Length: 273
Ligand code: SF4
Image (tube, rainbow, N blue to C red; front, side, top):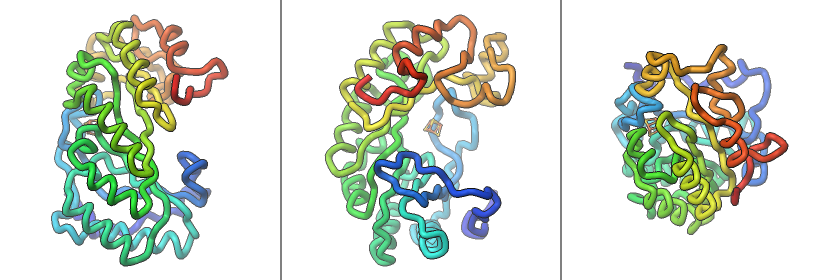
């Protein structure tokens, strides 16, 4: 296991070009992505088993300090104006979050930023969302996945539809806005489940709706099961992109799904769908 604090900062020049903002309306360029932990202790079957332990420095001061130092460096050297912290479970440890907020205030970094989170963690920590909004949080990418409890249980998400709705309300209360990350057409999903997801999105009205067709990633419980049953339609690396355009598994009416989730011009439809 690497000691994440010992790793050098990313050499961003190897990419040869500046990052594109995830959403220019809220996050001006230059934009940068940061990542300061690895792994996830949850058990969603379309994703796990990856690295199930969350690896992050244990002391509350360690990784926030590294992250904040990297932010300071990118602001000074690249002039970044906004950023995304792309960790899967940033809200896992509240001590860490408190220290992060304290360091952002001390270093006077008030740039707008986005994070990712599960809905249940947002419900558990509404005060943390409010505090993060005071230091620049403007958007949370939430893996709502489905508006059908049957499907949330089937994919072992460990969340409820009610938590999805509550989390969206919490995000809208401060200045943060939710981004609906949906996961449609898992094996076993029926049209009624899809309709429930569309209804949930209409209620949530996320700033951006980002639907993805279930993709059978090798190594994940659900992906391996699909490969074992010869259900995968994926022929090349491109097919593994989590977009809602190409068919991923057999037996799915993808035309119906595109009509429900994707606009006529092939762009992802914004909410309300
Ligand atoms: S989908 Fe997200 S919460 Fe679920 S196991 Fe993967 S990283 Fe963790």
